[in-house]
Image (cartoon, rainbow, N blue to C red):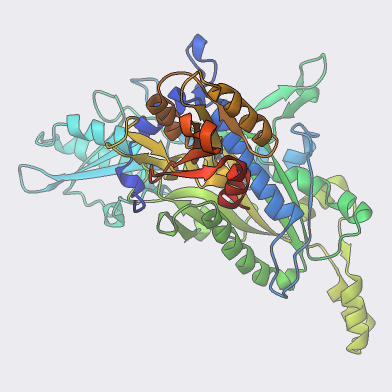
Length: 541
Ligand code: GAP
């Protein structure tokens, strides 16, 4: 079956399958949930761990081959979520990690001012009507637009007030794909309407205000300013804090990387689109330290390497793209940044961020050096020796061998990766009982094999049990003897299990089992003692 465009996939159906099959549940569901938090069920946890383990393996244990043909050097780390609060002052997160946000005074809803959807229609007087809907997903914007009376003529004064208001919101906004930039030039003749989703009338939005995304907590028994601390908003800072420890203890030399996977927390103004933007999420980040003059080469290397990595997970190349950040979009620490974007159902035909590859320059180490008063300079012995060989002066050698390293940072969302694999895998198929199956690349499937006795008699359960006991140490597999065989296949199709082995009457006679392929639904017979080899070959590395 050819790859299906994510644009044709329904987010609602994906979310429903995730709940039904135990991939992702709303957090605190029995208490009505809590916005921006999700729990990963048994299958979601397995899928997430598979992505995480593959990233760790390919980043730390078996890192890629660098431009010189040698494997690059990367070590792992697991730092604290809570650090000394001075860390976040030095990193710029206390002062600068803000989102602009607007409140709707009518509905009391809060929106991100830089997430604006625009819809346009011809008015009855032949002039265009321009409607800006602040915040909301594409679906919400479409729903609001469909209820809006596009023939209504606005009073002139309101029109001009709204025109000004729209310009204010649009200033510095990040626009979604389908918003033609020509709309930025709003002429006075155009009728402009700005409103928060669900508001009954336009013009009830406040001015955009800054909102810090850091979650605060208190350390120890006393709750005052001196005990205030923060949950980390990125795993990266833990790496910068341990840069010197790693240099001093691990015999690493420039260039090298430090990698970390773990939870991050952001009090997002508008968590939305399922697990795409949540308030608690997991990141897989690697800080690559290198000499400043080598940094362009490594930026280019990691950009392409990370795209290749996502493709190795089975994500279709046509659903991924690079997007360079404009200068005014760069984070406070960043010199250059390129996003690897995926075509999510809620952004399609546009794309949304999956991973950022940023050139952080020497920003973070310099900030920590200044704030902590600890020397974080690197002495590059190889450059010193090379400088001596090249006959450079002492000053020239010093200048090129003593430096604060530059950092290239491939930073991806592990939980966003889960969403991408769930979306890619989701494959509607009316011809099968489940009407849908999850086409995970076998290596990432939460369950690799289902083992079924056809009926619960004639010695079949015992043979199935023996097969299961022999496989379970090597593969995540499930023994299932309940319900009809069709229902068992349907369950495994929705779980994305690539192979199901059935023990039937013939097994007892000739020691063969049927193996059913999830994608083609084709069945073949193989010898029962070949099952392990079959799975090892199919699931591979
Ligand atoms: N250390 C750099 C950094 O944190 P970022 O672009 O803010 O950069 C990196 O985050 C990745 O983390 C993003 O590309 C995205 O995949 C993921 N991410 C960021 N905020 C998220 C959120 N609220 N929910 C889920 N994933 C998020």
